Image 1: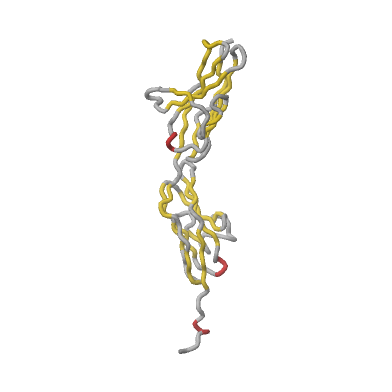
Image 2: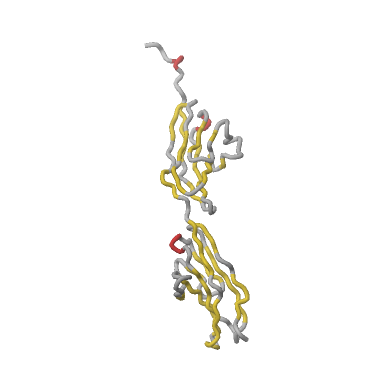
Length: 212
């Protein structure tokens, strides 16, 4: 019987650094079918399809399910399809529908936050400079938003959804806590800043000093 593509996964959209995949199923032929995934870097303008073998980037290239490891933005808008053939009848070969890979970039952290050292009762802040997203500050791995025991807008922490996190009043209880910012793009891709610490030194009690 004639070879037929019975199902095919759709286009795939991932964030830079994530894995992607395409899958098909086919039927027909005289027996065991052969599969060969192909790549087009010039589609849709001038289709130029080439066979792709297994590599550090691709796997499963002669199976029904191919994988792309850690896709980069350099692969954005590449198209893939699978050639299905019958090794016992060379005249039979069909191609799956071409599928598009979209790779969205991560937000770019230009200037990461730096550690801060202050005296108790001061009002320190952490700042990150980034492009391409919204901000979410965390302390000790917990989102500031909605965690009153760690962060609460209008009390200890404020502006935790902006580039600058403000701390209303530092105390020794905050020393050595870890702070970081997660920047998320409109496409849902995120980048996480480095983790920095707040060090709070006790203020000198002037009343305890001896007069000169």
